[in-house]
Length: 139
Image 1 (cartoon, rainbow, N blue to C red):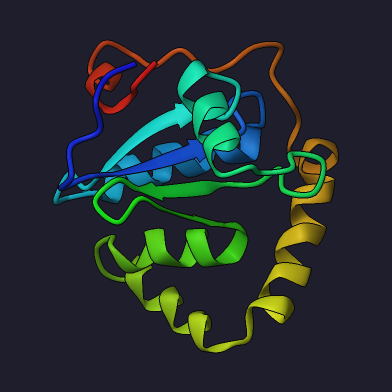
Image 2 (image 1 turned 135 degrees about the vertical axis):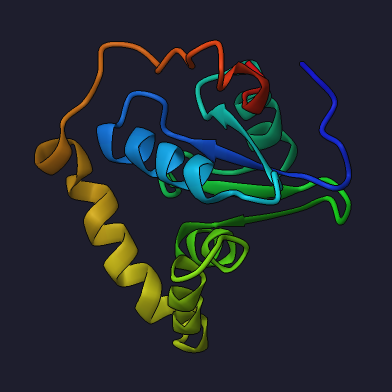
């Protein structure tokens, strides 16, 4: 596993989910300040962070945002909106939804997460980044 620099944050995502992979590519295109690195939840890095923070993957099978500087993990809608807040215009504007209580935001998030394979499909294996994107991925 590569070390995560303190000036970056790690986005852990479901590597076989088409919606998740599309979201990762969306973030990469708009991460103008190069703030994020990526790893699938299924990777060794993902498994180590899940274990470290004692995440129950039966209840939380969502995007995770790890901040190595603060040694903090956020998940579900909070992670998604924090990621959006660090992207370019107009994407950062949707972070305004952070004012809505998390239990309301996460109800919508969980509904989409529960249906993501049915609506968007699933890959047989994790996405393999192109050579140009390889530096953005830990594994």
